[in-house]
Length: 132
Image (cartoon, rainbow, N blue to C red; front, side, top):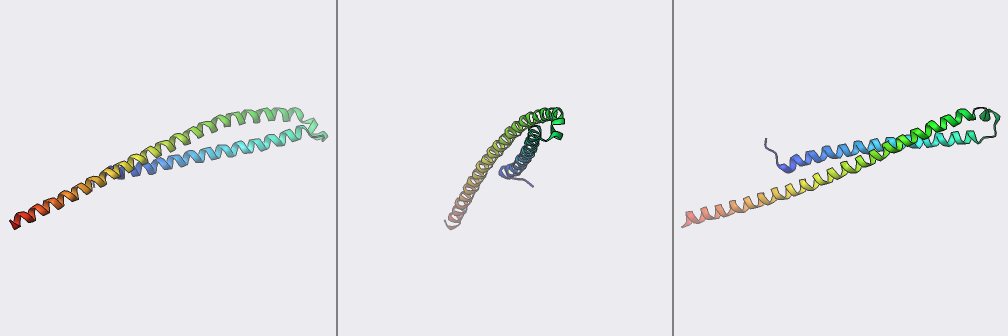
């Protein structure tokens, strides 16, 4: 079964939009992880600043834990930037493919319209030939 160029491009656009959604999900997951780390960092800072003697005993441990959380946050920040760029790249690809699909569909419609006009002319000439 022969398919039109626009139908093939439509399938590719669908796949590209799916890739875009996957990139958005990855970005959302990374953003959520960063939010969790930020909340944990706030809790650690509260514990370090606490006047409770139990927390003072563990202040060195809290400080080390806070440094690890900062490193994780920085790493996730870099990952988040990568995912943001990926989302933009996938969206741009999808938009371009969609534009090409629309152009192909318009070209196919023009060809179909031209063919129908040619058919009408052929029918008209054949009718005139039979008449004359």
